[in-house]
Image (cartoon, rainbow, N blue to C red; front, side):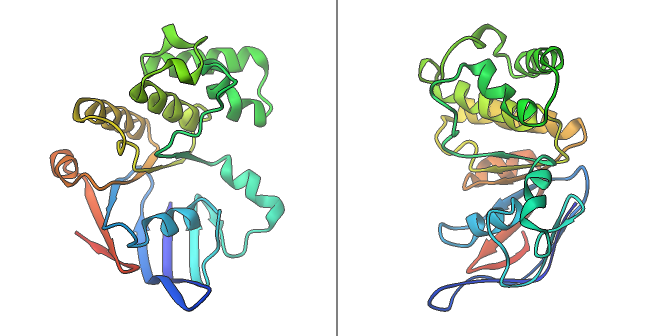
Length: 218
């Protein structure tokens, strides 16, 4: 589902962000990515989500070779994945329902299907009673649940979450991880970057470490 083979990423000034990365994540796995700030986590996620390209080597995600994918194919690729950001990236002028509906609107689903799908996912994240609220009316934990709902409403094969609990207290963090595990239980491959080592230990999942652009199993 996610495969890196001898992947390097170098930026201007010969800054090597990723060094000979070899990584395989199978369909349906739940994997944590850990490492210090500046280790290369963000770069790795940018390559996975096709927001950047490797300098050399290959990156394959959900059946797409991202070093060979055409620009016109990238929107179709992104429909196969879901991305959760640490800062949520919710649209402030749209309600919870409207934020979650965006991926389905882009995919051209009928309004009746959108209504049903969004209602279902909001129920799963316990936000049915907030569907007409705007992001600024929600707590941080609620905003993060909206972000996750938006990322999975189109039933992606891969979910990438970059520090999804970074701004939350321990109790809310556990709730978010429970939610991500429930998404994984539905068959979605989940790849989570986090600094929270105690949470990683409690969850007993596969852990990949990145440091200095080099990747290895924990």
